Figure 1 (cartoon, helix red, strand yellow):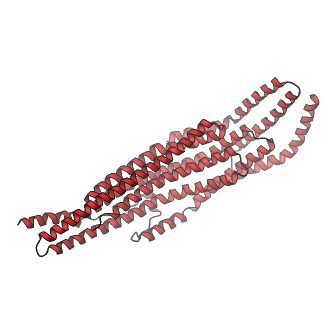
Figure 2: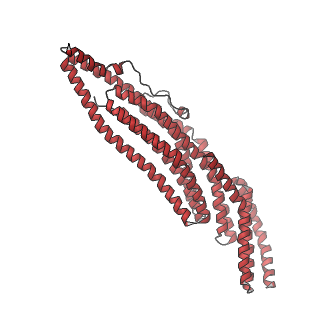
Figure 3: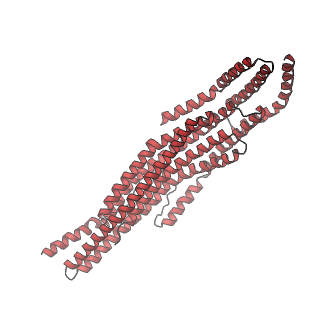
Length: 102
Length: 347
């Protein structure tokens, strides 16, 4: 299992080199479209959390710790929703403003 | 002696009410001044001028619509790249994307709904000033029964439609938009069903009011028009029969007076039609351009975007379409009412 974790880490670091170019392209899209930078960051964070947690869950399942994998899934969902909270808050504030205007 | 008194009474019913009064349409509201032609004698030229002016001023709105659509396209591109990096369809990414799309669309949609609300108010207020003028002019032309029936019907239906749109339909459009965003983000079938119900409700409310109005106007026009035409004929026959020697001359003279009243009524009616279109055309084109732009964007995004986000985008476009339908319904109702007054009585 330790070997699997080490190999995953090495492959992940290699992938980051390629992903850095994609991230700079995404940054360019963000600046061109004038989208809120905070929201794009939230989107990227959720992807990062999802990828890391998927790998961790699979490693747990491979080593026979299915229960650990399941609870890790629950933790991932909670953290992802917590990261997305600013989006929901912004949407709620917008709806409140519209309701007040009505 | 009896014949002279009878003649004077008959003459007064036709001439006195129409001879000394001028019937002019009220000035166009401020929102329509930009598109209103100076000369409204020719209907076709006036209409072309209104359309030309509206198209000349549409460039900034087209640019704004394009900016919103480019933002949406780039958001879809971003989500598509993120999805590819993740390697699988992620509920959370699409939830976040639907919410972001909703945030981008809510502000412009709110602006357009407020514009539709203001346009409805302007058209209603103008209708309340114009319809009494048309009614008085029609009554002066001899259409006493028609004018009363048309005035009552047109005023009631315009008030009802204005109240329904401003108090029920516009708030429902906001709720529809919010439900669309939640439906796209969460995928809950109950929310989607409620959203579809709201769309159906708004569409059928507008249709039913227009159908009932058109039916009322058609039936009223036929019945009262016939009644007034018969009454006018009877009055003319009575005058030419009652008054010796000059009876037919007086009957022809009364015809001239009625035709003059009809001419004033038609002039006011044509100005009123052009004014209503001038108030309606600007907001219609603004919302229409955004609607078309969103539809085109949804068509492009369907090739690489997520199904949930494309559905949210389509729902935003449908909401714009419903706002367009609302102002179109009010404009159509006013135009039909004015045309019925212009049609008047057959002499």
